[in-house]
Image (cartoon, rainbow, N blue to C red; front, side):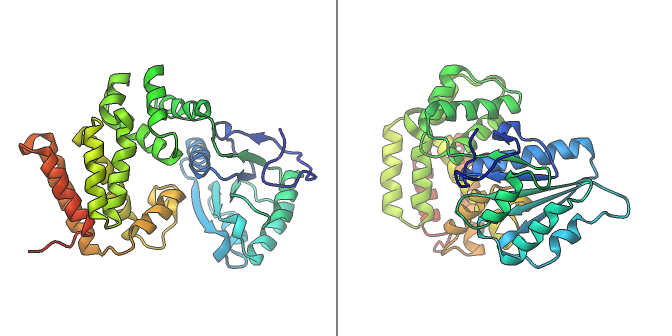
Length: 338
């Protein structure tokens, strides 16, 4: 398999693996632009290492804000010899200090330590990448190329259910991917929602109930417009979704998914994505969504979501009115008149 993300002349002497074949090594380079796959691979590595030894110590570094000597300090053996996992994000924009330390580290990796380097694309850090691919440090590379074909996205979604030990019918899988063909992150979120909400096997009728007629994609469009303060656009998108057969329950769930993530990121500003239990792309999107919001507004929005969720599940007679009311609160960024 040819190296991706480097030059054609770069010598590759280490295994290059798909995300679902991720395995530990002293150095693990996760390359490529697909953040969802990279997050999955990183999580699999952490879980595998923790299964081998629950005392695993996990540390997160950002390569662009790196202080000289930090990598060596974190990798140094502890008093009790616990295994260590050091995850480094943003290597494609790494500081000179990090690149110098990382190159030094390759010459003598610490025993019992796994260093994961996330590099999305670009030429920054090329010397480091070439050294890893040439075999220095005894590493492996996990290639997370963008998924372009529907068949690749179906394989990804099928793996989501397989890893959760759940079954999804082939027709249901195709329908799910059709609803989210433009956004792998939203496809992953939809898979997780079905796994969490639906008992037993997932069939085509279940997918149609949640996402039929591009319902979930439309639901996220409604939520995106409302969160950005575009009230009229959100109401128009709501009517389009309802005319397409959208069910109010998963529509409220789309709002809830986004607002919960926004609240989590707002409550832990500056924290790394891994510390929040989120993928980097989710944190970046939430930070964009939070523009113009206040903590008080988020609190009001969460209360409105709870009321809307109860309303669409039978607490009120008119679920459409409940959705319109929710959109009003969200579009006002939670600032409602007394």
